[in-house]
Length: 272
Image (cartoon, rainbow, N blue to C red; front, side, top):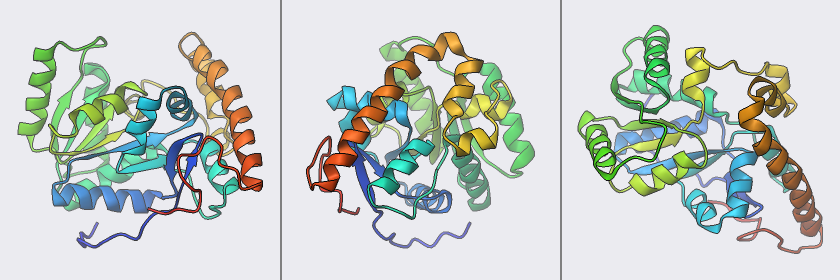
């Protein structure tokens, strides 16, 4: 990918139940992240779905974290549909695992080192092998699989130092929503990287977790596939969040027809 050091046009966006979602694309998001990394910016990118939207709806502090991200992509098809319903007709899905591949390819071509934070030692090892096979020349500066528990201050300090000293300019963070967004916001001023919350991308691409068929993704039924695959872990999330999202967004959409601002932080005609 050619680095142009150019200024980007403002993105259109909408507040969906109070959470900002940007109308971007794989190409646009990748170019922005690569340019930010090349410029040495410290920032973070959120890859948003219904789960994140409802976490933000329920928690104003978390909503503020997402809304202050450098970029918020519409990971799930329901968010693509809601952007279109709110007037942005030209928008597309920017799915975290696929964006991960775009970024790794572009980083390899541009010689930008990346870092991996999340998963298990086994999944990181498998993902590492996958990356070297598919993107020859990619520079993986660090690989960290933190424990599945709150870190001690010393552990967090050590990991932060390791990432900073590694030289990684793009850090893929795969520790799940909302944990990864909270972590990225907390470390924004301590890690000199563009941090991208990619959720389960490491597990998907390492083959440890199966992805849903593309036809299910296109019709917004990926959640059902994941529920079938991991019912004990995911049933509470989907049954809590999905019905409420539909109800509350319908209220927002109907209110927009009358010019009313419901669940919106700002006017839906703004761009950024």
